[in-house]
Image (cartoon, rainbow, N blue to C red):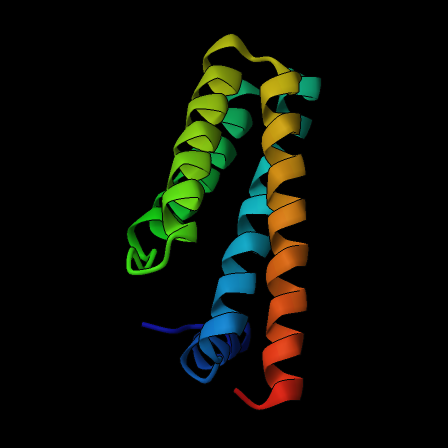
Length: 126
């Protein structure tokens, strides 16, 4: 049951978004959760770290299962997503920032690439 106007807005925005907008929303969420997990490590708040890094892993897992394997690039993305999940597990278990920072870099680069691709598709009308 949706209780707040914000929850209603979020649900509506997801339901009315294009596939490229949804993909960018997933990346934004993963980026936010990894940053929060890194913050948790810095603060030694390991409950926060665990919760947020697990949320990032869930998003990356969702990105993995939604890949269209009819495209060659999906194999590389699948391997990268698997590696990122491995790094997040390592960061969470060892409470180390470096593996999570590496994942953050990949997520930021991928998000930017997808954003540019979405703009190109929107402009070209394909």
